[in-house]
Image (cartoon, rainbow, N blue to C red):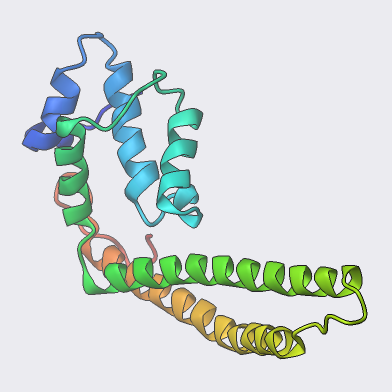
Length: 183
């Protein structure tokens, strides 16, 4: 485990590193990994909603029980997020979060339909089922199913744009430049 020397130059990250008294900086490494996994759009955890994502990252990194983001961590997180601050990345994150929200809406609509249909089989013949609400929910599901592929295509396009944007900004140690076939 190596903490890149460049991190020690940025005060917010330096505080995370220097407060760890362990010679190998194991706690600092985990906290910096937490920042990446919980807040970077390229993280494999980014498919989860924010609260679930943070919980999963804490568990998988085996952070101490009761570990929370303190003020120094929040400063480092804010600094890290500022590095990701580009219009393309902001759009990508917003659309991904919208897609997560739409998944919740689909689940809620499906549950509403299932409950209404279950009530229909449990009720007496005298109590009519509100077919209008079932039809409306099914119509909403169909509308969402037509819009989701477009959103997914938009996410793919934005991811490609972000990759190109970042490949133009990437650097090579020693100040060299990339060849045309290097990634």
